[in-house]
Image (cartoon, rainbow, N blue to C red; front, side, top):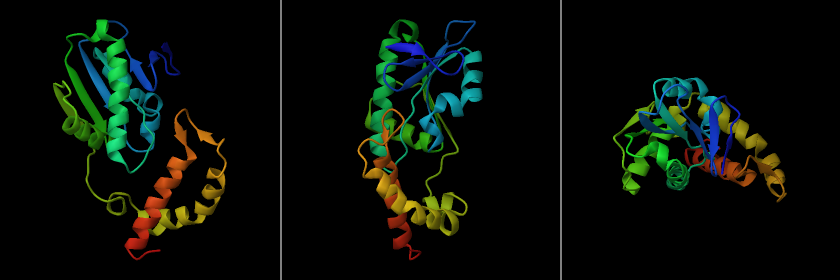
Length: 194
């Protein structure tokens, strides 16, 4: 199923991928775009200007959103499945075009995992703002500000997650956010800051 998207020129491709086609020319290449943590959940909105710039240069962009989490293997599998479904549905348009992966931050890690787990046919990857540091080193004020804040909202999130009807987005449940919060709290406890 393909339907019009919220950003001018985008269309939703099947379940969970967004496509931005060049407006004035036939595509010369395909880019599989994966954004960073949190903002990667809506790349068609959060990376809009960047993706539109690629489309203006003749690139057909397939952006795959994902729910944030610490299971990067799961995210890589989910993102690649969404890309494959969409790519297949566009086969007439993208056949024989060079394909590149572009990832920002965690999206870079996801592309590295995809390349190591699957026999993807890529002409290359562009990895922007990639780092392999722990969150406490990579995010300013992570331990002194974000961890205590997360600890204070933990009980509230637990109450919210007890309701099976609470949903955030199409495929993201509050349970995913609680798992992330628990992982943050566990890591802070291991570092002696809890």
